[in-house]
Amino acid sequence: MSWSGFLTETMGRIGVLQKQTPGMFEGFNSMSKAAKRNGALDEKSKELIALGIAISTRCDSCIGFHTKSLVRLGTTREEFCEALEMIGYMGGGPSIAFGAKALEAFDEFTGTGA
Image 1 (tube, rainbow, N blue to C red):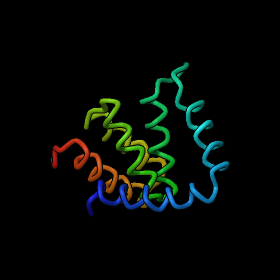
Image 2 (cartoon, rainbow, N blue to C red):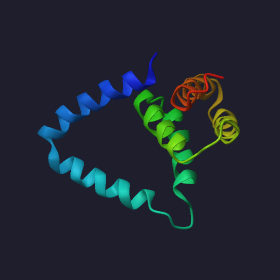
Image 3 (cartoon, helix red, strand yellow):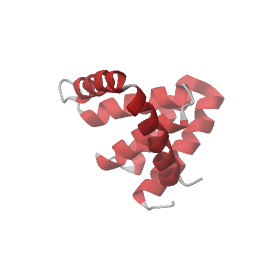
Image 4 (cartoon, rainbow, N blue to C red):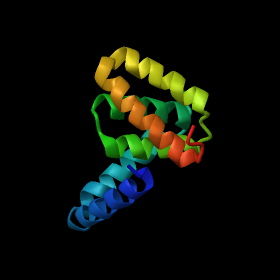
């Protein structure tokens, strides 16, 4: 799967919904900004938490978006894989399978293709 193409298609679908529900998106965007602000935890730590939730809820779109954010924030493959270890430990087999998808996305977004 092309994660970049998948996220582009997802954004197109979200855009259609946003036109019909602008208030919901205004609220969601406000919540997003508040949640991502640097405080006791930095944005990268918060995105790693979000990745864990995305994997545990088996949301491909969320996995793609949060992985892309982690790449933007300079997450190394080693950091990413350590997070996947913890996520797999807490979520068992399904989280390991979706963690493998997340690593595939990470490699695509970083251009490493490890």
